[in-house]
Length: 126
Image (cartoon, rainbow, N blue to C red; front, side, top):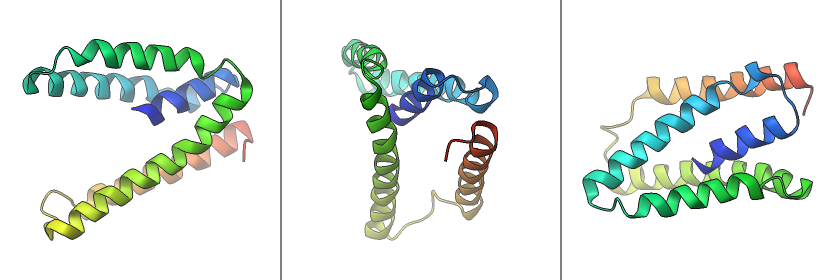
């Protein structure tokens, strides 16, 4: 969720065309709803306010200075890679890939590659 918020804020901050980041608000809404369901059914609904304030504050703090949004954008790559490594480590330890399909991973890789290509072509931001 953090990465999606940073990507959205970065593209709005630099005035990118709407079609390059239109999917992010939808993905963020899906993640927020999923997070609320998880908090609700685990009995931790009181944490929802904490998360809401944290993300709302972070949304505005990202653009206080230009270097903050640039640094956050660069850290998103590291965070995304770390989350994938954590998933791979979990798969390796459990020796069970029953919840993972090659099709899902292929679609995810294709989506990421397409997003990079369209952003570079539309905004010329390497």
